[in-house]
Length: 288
Image (cartoon, rainbow, N blue to C red; front, side, top):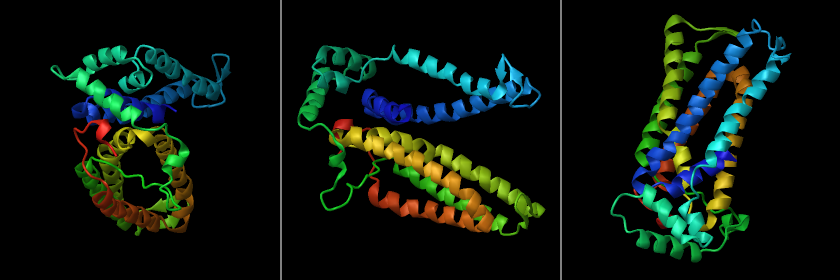
C-alpha cells in the first residue's frame, strides 16, 4: 500500500517544478532502507554467532529479525499523522480553506492560490470517480498505460543498462563448470563484475527513480486511483517474476539469460521514444 500511496501523495502535494526531485526521494528511501535492514540483520545474527535459530532476547534470532521490521513501520505510521492531506483531496471533500493553507506552504511565493484552487476544483468536478472499468479502452483491451515524462533519463538509463547487460552476457559465455561451481577467466571475470555493477548503477540513476516518479504523475485524475494500483502491482509482480525465473534461466544458459535481459532493455528505448512525452514542470491537472 505504501508503494502505491507514497508516489501519488508526493505528486499531488509537490509543486510541478519540484515534483520529480521529491518523488525520487522515495526510491532513495527504499534503497537506503534495504541497506539499513541488511546491516541490522547482519548485526543481530552476529550476536548469535551466525546461527539464525540461536537464542536472542528470549526468542530465536530469525524471530527477532522479523520483529525488528515493526520498528520502522511504527515510526512511519506515527510520522504520517503529522503530514497534511493532499490539496486535491481537501478540495474534493469541500475543504478549500484547508487546501489553501497546504498550497501556501508548498507553492512558490507569489503563486495565485485562488487560481490554483479553482483549476483543481474544475478538474475534479469535471471527472467521475474512477473505477476499474475506466482502464478499459473500449476496444476489447486495456487502456494504454502511457508513461509520461522523464524521457532523457529513461533513454540514457536504457542504453546504459543494455550495454552493461550485453558485456556481462559476453563475459559469461566463457564460463567453465556448472551449477554453483562455475569459473571465469580473469579478464572475463573482471568484465562481468564491471558489467553487473554498471547495470545496477544505470538502473538506480534512471528507471529505479523514473518509475516511481511516473507512477505518481502519469495518470489523469479520472483514472489515477485505479491505474496507480494496477501499475504498482504490475511492477511488484514483474520483480517477482524476474527473481523467480532467473535460477532456471541461469541453469539453462547463464549467458543466454543476460542476452534476454539485454533485449528487453533495448526494447525499452523505442517504447520510450513512442509513448513517453516529457511532462517536466506540468501541473497534474494537465495530465491526460
